Amino acid sequence: MKEEVVDVDPNIVLHDNVTGPRSGKDADEAKFHVGQKVKLLEDIVNDGTYPHSPIGTLMMPKGSIGYIKTMGDFLQVIRVYEVHFFGTEMPIDAVGCREHELEAMEEYVDEVAEEFAIMKAHRERMQKAREEKKDT
Image 1 (cartoon, rainbow, N blue to C red):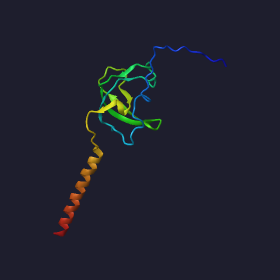
Image 2: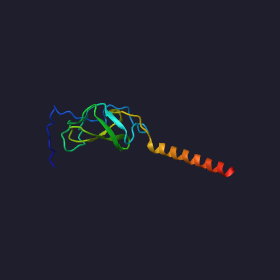
Image 3: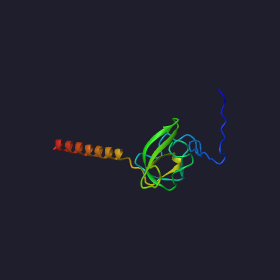
Image 4: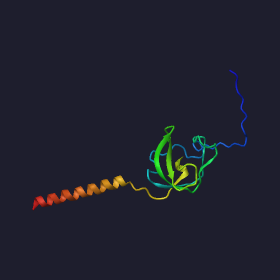
């Protein structure tokens, strides 16, 4: 088999957010949560993972506001957030983002934990009322 030689355009810049600037392995606990409102801290460009645009194409501009749709892991150590952006003029509305590319726009409220706390307090009040009624 003959080896094929391919000339590479020296003006093409590859954008690699996976091995780009980062502080190392992501923390055990996620910094952001599903449903949380976030803002992009830097432009997101196609690093080759989106097949319908050339590498280097702007996918979502810095400052865009979106919501965390899902979370996943790349290579089992790199947390990636799927962020859904509304009302943009970009060719797509959801992109994968790393923690260092995002800033929280609101504090996360764990609604499930809040509901459990409300239900627990209600059960405790009802139990106390039953005990007081039984004692009288």
